[in-house]
Length: 359
Ligand SMILES: CCCCn1c(-c2ccccc2C)cn2c3c(=O)[nH]c(=O)n(C)c3nc12
Image (cartoon, rainbow, N blue to C red):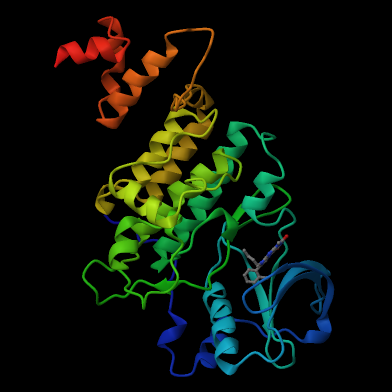
């Protein structure tokens, strides 16, 4: 029989008459005198992000992160700011950032969460380029997938999954954060997709159907998850490099996909490609992604075979005819026939002149 997941369904705060009602229902009010702000660690859309201490009666003092609402913010800013807290307050998962509470009865208004000592994942990776084993990197991917699995089981679509919106704690545990843009799946639309009013879309992380038709589903979150996998293996490289958003959209539409980063296991690049299937029903579910990653972590030998780096004008002086090989390879890749490369080589077809005689 079907296994009923133990999680409750998420309630979209926007369905409340009075959004303050959602805040009261899903968050715990903290008295500002229990909070000590120590330093500013970042900046957000609504104000500073700080590090500090939280002292709750009967509990040990704990280090926290605090989002503050800048003074002079409008009532709409305040409601949008607190909506994120109403969303986070409904979640309880080891790979989703934990909400300690909010300060709404004094100024500045604050959202208080657990403190993640290693900060946002993109910055953390760029500052530690090349320092982790592939098992550690796959462990990070697994954490993000597990958090996203929990959110999708809650019927929640993130819409802005990217390494910049993932936080890392002192034990390298990755947690999904930043619920500002998100919306719940609308139950009445046919495929449970969400149509939005054309908010700013992070193109290089977003699935084609979400860009083209503004349909956001857990399957479009899976597309974004594939890009996060690519960011992790490439230690925070910018997806599609310096291409323009329009070039990204056109290339992806024509079937281009990000190449495996350096030293990327073939099994990991294949999983990325599965997440980037054009047809969203062909993409793996997050439950399946977690299982696949668990299997790879338990059998590390499966990660030994590395994906072939795509030789773009890759001239290796030691093997002079490498240039001809790469052009045969590039030709086969461009017609999606690169799986027959070794047959062409076995038949002695290592340069395009020989291939031309074939036609
Ligand atoms: C991508 C999230 C950006 C805001 N934010 C949050 C956060 C995220 C959502 C709601 C409330 C807060 C305080 C925690 N932390 C942390 C943290 O725990 N540790 C950090 O080092 N940084 C930079 C953080 N930045 C945040």
